[in-house]
Length: 254
Length: 359
Image (cartoon, rainbow over all chains, first blue to last red; front, side, top):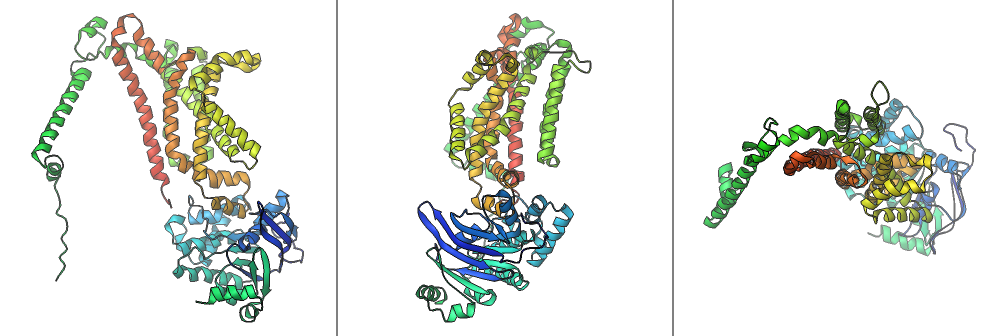
């Protein structure tokens, strides 16, 4: 079990070793290995169906892996429910489709998990929620319901909701793919701010400008494998891999 | 050319009526004819129910039978049997008070301040316990009245409320089991639900009331009333479970994933995320099921209980009021209407209230 403020082992934030994942007979991940240091910012890209979402969904066990090992903050992710709960408390996630709870106000969305999972007193949970809503620049929407907000606003609430759990690591699963173009910037700005403050993050995205600006390392996946990983300068300018170059020309080509 | 925007002319009420019903001579004729029929029927009904009706018991059944209109005297003379059945005459205030408790519980359930799981459970738990103590007595100086003497409206309400109180949680459990990830659990639950649903309610009531005592050990048999309530709750839960499951299917899978990613455990996800949204989706069908169940309580007549409909039969069935069955049934229908209509309005109120913040 990971507890909230005990000194941590000094290993990587996320260590993935030889990860295999099958859906029936279809192999979605093939011997994927990846090590993410604390404070590191990783962008994962690749064509659809390449396994990038599957990989980050394995990190907080929204998907169960079939082979290999995942270690998060020194705790191995296995069938131990205590481990799974502990890891989920420390790993925040932002989804493509926001997944806000529509029957609660924005504020309640942000307060619920800290109160019932971390047992934070209501007043503290509200203070934290308001602070993070401020941070994502929508404090005035606290009493509205998600259905009353634009997509960009909803995604920023979703980021605030994840941050309210004070996670060590943030996972972003295509956070801007479901947004209208004019709303992408407001969401990316929030993520960039978060990155500049030293949050460990793994972000699946097709926003290559964002990757160039923020990432310490860009991972390219195809066919369930990590094909290439490199710092953004190197990745965008001097990739020698055929599949990477083809993907980049498609994404950047217009 | 300049665009001229002309607002549609405001139409007065009379002009509106004229356009709708008297636009052409034929339409006017049809409108007048229908109006005449409606007025005639309304007059007939009013004449029967009010103007030519007898309201007092002073003339006795004979005078009443001779009258052209309705004989409401039968209600005045027999309302206690209809409402309270065979409950001892001197104790019928308890039965009346018990009915009032149900009404109070229902009204309290409409107050948003009581809409937390704990408070609603408290209202219904405490209310039902109070109802039970009042009806049964044997404590606090209240004379004991066995379940076999309960009857009328109080019995109808008791069966309905306890059926829902037992059946609703059971339905949620069944619905959750049915969507279990383990096939042998979900399939078995499905089999139970489909099994119960494919039996007629009458046969279930009959089995629980008459057959079960032969199969169970003596200490488990209990009073017939509670066996019947259990049977009816089981029947209710089988239908309601499918309604709840339907509501759950309407909740996107992303909701549960988001709750998981925030570290919520199974029961937290079910209680805070899944059920509130599922119940919202399932509300119209749920109210429908409540209404059906309320009216189905009348089936307990076949296992020998005098709920309101059976009590009504008894009220006119004895000798001198035998001719006045229409009035008795109209009275009972009116009581059913009050309860069921309130239930429907309550459902509509909930729907309006819950649509706040709908996507």
